[in-house]
Image (cartoon, rainbow, N blue to C red; front, side):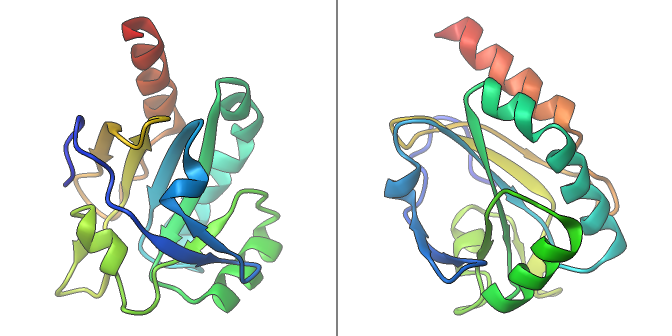
Length: 155
């Protein structure tokens, strides 16, 4: 998994609305990439619902969330609409998992991402990263808030 202090690998991915989102688009703020295995699975559904519940607090803390999985933009759109999610879902669809691989969170033998969080600073540097020990463990929103607090204290 990518380590804090590393430059965030560049990417250009399509979101649920067909818009291209790149690393450059995230500059100027703190971005949290939420790598998750797949749309529509029960655990992924629970994970993204948890983040949606605290999205206003994350925005207030200056962080923008971006979900990333190997699903297509079309799947992301249906999944986002079904759950009522308001943060972007980025399709790491083709080549499958290429961006997740750059961040060290793609599981080759399974063909999907592990559950991981990567916080990127205004300058494109990785500020913090976390990988769940198992695909069944949801990284709680508290981890993101703790990382934001630690970053603010260090700044």
